[in-house]
View 1: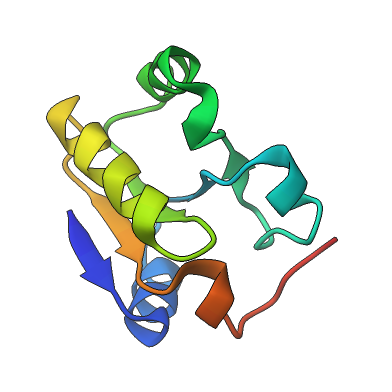
View 2: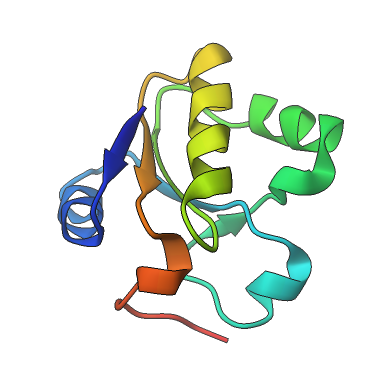
Length: 103
């Protein structure tokens, strides 16, 4: 897992042909807006979260974010322990995100 600043995260994401953006916030948080192209799996689903990430392609790169960067960091660590080799956490999460957001 790597913690990336917004600039590093966005630049690396743009140059990554295997990139998947993963939003691990709650449904209520997602209603405030989501990064375009992101898939949503709520980290607080517990075992349901594990079931959903197990369905993902482990050969892809995952750019993970939440509200502040805490849950997404935990999600990246969990993904790494499940065999995902490329999980990147957005430091500061949506609180510091200055890129595009869709409602």
